[in-house]
Length: 125
Image (cartoon, rainbow, N blue to C red):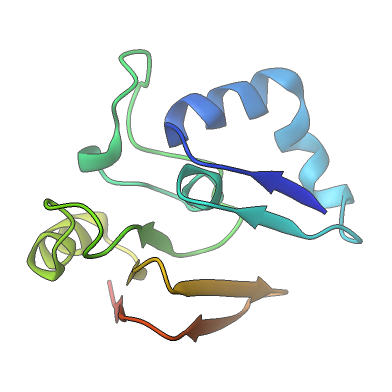
C-alpha cells in the first residue's frame, strides 16, 4: 500500500515526476494507492485553478491516472460548498466528483465506485 496525505496537489505531482515515482506507478499494479486530499487529487487529470496554491505550478494539470477530478472537503471548509463545486466542475471539461469527509472513491481498472456515508455528487463534462 502507498499512502499520500494532503498538501498541495501540483507540488506533490511535481515531485512524483521528479523522483520517478510517477513513471513507476503503472508497474505497481499489485499496490493500492490511498490518497487523502491532495494525495487523491494528484491522481486526477486536473485539479482546477481554485486548488492551485504552489507558485511553481505551470497550470492545474496533475498525473491523470484516473479520468475524473476531485473537489475534496465538501462542506468542511467555508469555501467548499456545493455551489463552489458546481462552478469548479463547469470549468474542467471532464467528469468530476465533489466529496465530503465521509466519502471515498475506489477506482480499479477503469471501474469507479463511490463509498459514502456522507454527501457527494458526480458532475459530467
